[in-house]
Amino acid sequence: MDKHTVLVTGGAGFIGSHACVELLQAGFNVVVVDNLSNSKLESLKRVEQITGKTLQFYQADIRDKTALTDIFAKESIATVIHFAGLKAVGESCEQPLNYYHNNVYGTLVLLEAMSEANVKQLVFSSSATVYQPSETGQYSESLPLGAINPYGRSKVMVEDILRDVAAVDKIKPNGAPWKVALLRYFNPIGAHESGMIGEDPNGIPNNLMPYVSQVAIGNLKQLSVYGNDYATPDGTGIRDYIHVVDLVKGHIKAIEAIESDKFSGGGCKAYNLGTGKGYSVLDIVNTFEAVTGRKILYQFAPRRAGDLAECFANPALADKELNWIADKDLEDMIADTWNWQVKNPQGYVD
Ligand code: NAD
Ligand code: UDP
Image 1 (cartoon, helix red, strand yellow):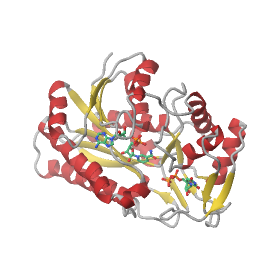
Image 2 (cartoon, helix red, strand yellow; image 1 turned 120 degrees about the vertical axis):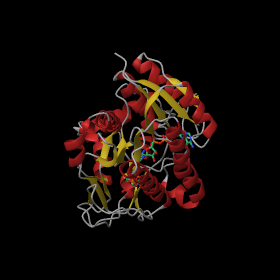
Image 3 (tube, helix red, strand yellow; image 1 turned 180 degrees about the vertical axis):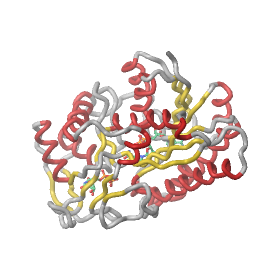
């Protein structure tokens, strides 16, 4: 039975394409808007191959109000999952205006188009980078926000805007209220078990897992481990890696919550999506070698500016309110990353 229609902004990207698979398999109709600035149409063709279902694709920029208005007029959209945006921390320090324009202004245009079309259910891709760095390394939703780079600040700004927009309904009810889930991702890795879709970064990867995977396949020579003098058991940075398929299942749970009594009367709530477990860079290297049988050449290098020693989620709220917990372990994440890498050594080829 068909459920309602979901507009997925940024649906051709890494997380968005995996979300499209889960949504189609759960019976939702899917409409994607993406400007393909960091993705290829091939990802969506593969989504259709995996699911045996079709989706509607619009190549457009979310900052193009006319294009969005047309999409809302043509499609009867009930909920938006908003992935579209730029995501590289280092690049955001070099191009802050570009980041604020895509991530903040782009979201404003989307919210205006949604408001005019009376579509007020939204799941937003936020990030663990919104939190003010804490000594313990573990982050709960109640901890103070305070990002330390333009990318993170763009996410805090959008969260603030969404809290303000949803708060108006409490002051002055006006038709259907806004229902917004802010999902704060920790470190998404892995790929769909088919190996047909996965992470396909442009150029040299910034993130650990695609870098390691490209060293293993022979595209890159060796990994630089950024810092071995952190106050962690082996001196390297600790993160909470989460399988992308577990992560996107959290979005379906968020839609279900938004449509349940939990959001009756509207509101804007934040949820961490992480496993609650931290792994060091060397844990990743060692587990990658054990799972794939490949040697990962690495050298220690200075710390990367802006990196924290440790960052992992307290995922209890998502468990309690969304009935969501991550299922897959680090071995699954690495096996699926490797399966995608081996089947697509050069990523997507259009
Ligand atoms: P991605 O770059 O693979 O996907 C983003 C998609 O949005 C791309 O297909 C890109 O072409 C599209 N896009 C960008 N700007 C656009 C615009 N102005 N109009 C239309 N389309 C546009 O990134 P991803 O890893 O899939 O991340 C998705 C979301 O999750 C982003 O908002 C990101 O900030 C957030 N997030 C990602 C991570 C991560 O580690 N991957 C962690 C936390 C949060
Ligand atoms: N890292 C590394 N070498 C790399 C990329 C990343 O040592 O080439 C480390 C980084 O310092 C951090 C962890 O791997 O401790 C995860 O980094 P990533 O960029 O994947 O995610 P982040 O948590 O920074 O968003």
